[in-house]
Length: 477
Image (cartoon, rainbow, N blue to C red; front, side):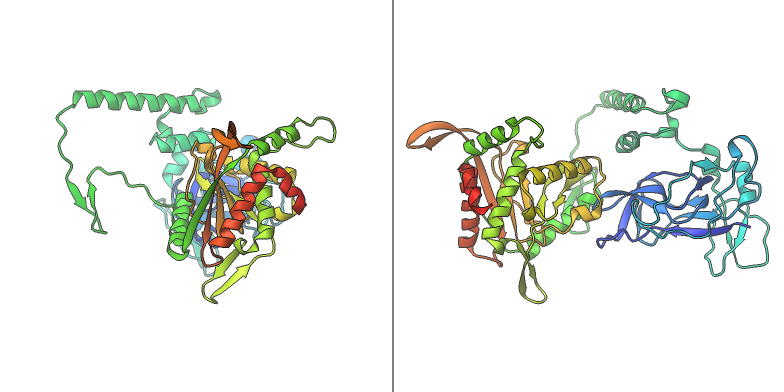
């Protein structure tokens, strides 16, 4: 007799309390192994795959893709043990794993690290025999609108399968990007006929459906074109008038986490900003010379961001007040010994700040390599929560957006952030003569509780001096 175990959304660490289901990796009836990823979820920190600590047959899933669940909420139920009728020939051959326990790990990459078994599914007509009513002492009762199996004498968990999940089967989509694109445009994948092998739905199929929907909407608008009437404002709970047809976008996931952190920063931190223009011509020349080196001893190409990060670590060594945080309860400034340098990265999921650990011990090449690695993980949504927390100072290169300056909001609970604008040719007085030079604007936003303007100005001036004369860094090496 199989035993049914309920797997709940685990604590993903870093104080996270909820996660959104992005993609189910298993269906009802699938056979899963211990530590096999079963669902991909998005938290306020990152997108992660959650492994199941049990091996057996998936009997129920809780929550559709796009549903937000709190930590501790049921994710799925698994029947562990060797179910009757689960063996046979052809595609049904084999039996479910007989493990009745699990590793109890939280994220992929931790725990036992057992290899994932080949995905196998119990035929729907055998699922009711494979898992009926299993004795589980003190377990809750899970209800579902399907006929129950005969009762047995013991505390039981009723394991029932929703008719829709069995009859309709999985949507023939492999790519998570295709699923996300369909969700963003409200495209029902079950209504699409895939043009790929065995009916696989491709991105081209979703793009075609999006164009069709847009053309239909345009045609309908032309037919129903009429004089525009004034919108009637509706009263919102906070007393602000909102148009009836206004779009409401939930503040959750990364966007919600960013909103909370920025609001807290503005509420708690008395920040101030100072800025300066600097001649970056020599810095760009040094970078070109470093990247022109060839041969076995030549390292990876060094980016401007990596050079600026190295300058920041040297400046923080001279002005450690800015590598600190404020303990409001103890009313103390906590000065930190190591520099964990965060850098702002814009991704499809929103703005994230990966952290280069122990940046003060790295040279420009090492920092650049780590920035490149973390940036790639950020773009693919594979950053772990640990890689997005623990920063002590942030470098924000908003020049990539084509802007010159900004007044950055401090990344709470840090004490300062250096902003870098675009580097572009401008008229500049160089050695007493007017010349065209590569000029950049640097801005420093700092917590006025940890230092005064003299310290902040000294830090920013040192950074600007290193940008204008990179040889200044040699004094700190």
